[in-house]
Image 1 (cartoon, rainbow, N blue to C red):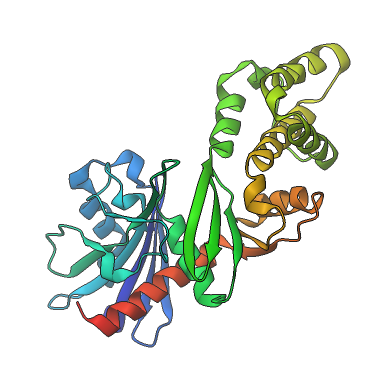
Image 2: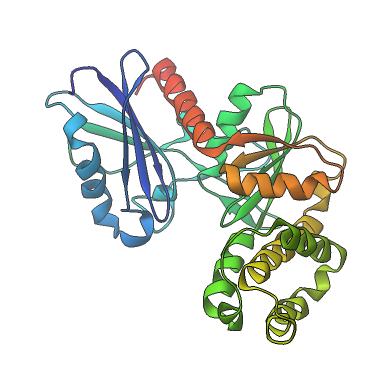
Length: 303
């Protein structure tokens, strides 16, 4: 099982750990997942969590490179990786931080995040997806949007990250659904007409967001709005307000969306009403492309 293992790619987020094991021919021989994300680990628990996942693919007497991105490099992670300041290309392996691994069978490189001084902003993990996208689209000039818990809008020019802004839209949706009065009035489901209505309202009057949120509660009590319709309207309101705030990023420029298909399709649907025609790229594919690019660079500079 271990003789042909060349290196291991790792995407380590707050809630999950994912690893891809590559052989010497550059083929994936195993895809591994764990729920041991950064959020449940103390500093000294990272190495055991990683080994629990990848140990069957390690050989005695052989040091296997492990290239990791994401929250593993946060201040609360295994070891804090540096930030590259914008403007900058997606940071490469030559700026990686080596994790203090005790097992002689692994050498762990944690890729840097990216920071912005004013307005203050940071990203960890998304820069690797961006690097993967630019490796496949080297002439891209425009905006990348990475929807998620903390959605990133990123200006790209000449292969560099010029500026970016983070919107906590996904976090807010989860918090409102789980911890406000709307938990009694909303339930997840699909109602695209209600979603579209919410997007239009959020775009047209973003300053009315908190008032319109309570309107969802009242509509259910007084006019029979269904729980699914309320949830979809809520989603639309939040994304619409985000698009209003991110106007400088998407207006009049090429836009590409990187992430999960379902959420990216919602953003694409919303942007299409504004005249934008974004292309879509799968987030998992892009993060793996970014990690592959880091490994290719590692081979050229040595360890």
